[in-house]
Amino acid sequence: MPSLVASALTTGSLAAFEQPEIRGDGLLLRPWREADRAAVIAGYADPSIQRWHCRTMDEAEAAAWIAGWPQRWRAETGAGWAIVDLTAADGPDDGQVAGQISFRRIDLVDAAAELSYWVLPAFRGRRIAPRALAALTDWAFSRAGLHRLELNHSTVNVASCRVAEQAGYPAEGVKRAEARHTDGWHDMHQHARLATDRPGSTSS
Image 1 (cartoon, one colour):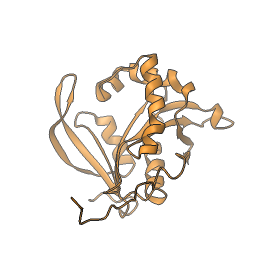
Image 2 (cartoon, helix red, strand yellow; image 1 turned 180 degrees about the vertical axis):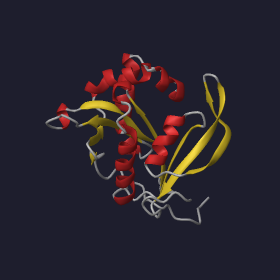
Image 3 (tube, helix red, strand yellow; image 1 turned 30 degrees about the vertical axis):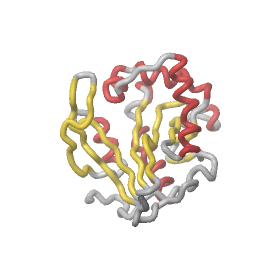
Image 4 (cartoon, one colour; image 1 turned 120 degrees about the vertical axis):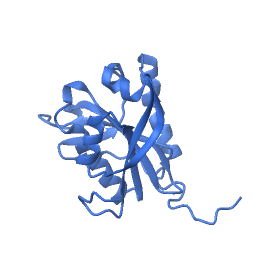
């Protein structure tokens, strides 16, 4: 049946252009490449990443995961970027993949997206995740035209909560037993930012 509310973003708003590379504070967010397969496998072999993302990957699965992101961009259902650390690098091709950040889902009707991120063990403690989140947030609001960005994490995932707060995502509440992890159901914190939020604002 027809909706009485027009879609906030029209179909093709994202797919009309190539998925961009995004720079910010010593980092480059770029689309995944086939050559990044080892970094993806290493990420999903890390116990802490496994704990919160609840999956592992072998060679074939990592290749399929990388290959799937361009399709999701064209379908405007999701988007994934490799986080490249440019510290001590002469250029982006010399930088090392430090982690990933993605739109797990995109909703054009509500101009909204849900975020996900992880950082490889060797790069932790350098504020990689909050810097990447800040860069993607700025692009999403200023270039992509999104209205709302949200992220969710287990209430016992203190590190992810800290990342959200450092990137200016205030907590909006707790969703009870919303996600199932390997040790059972977890309550989830929801954080969000709106395009209309003032920089540094911590109120919803």
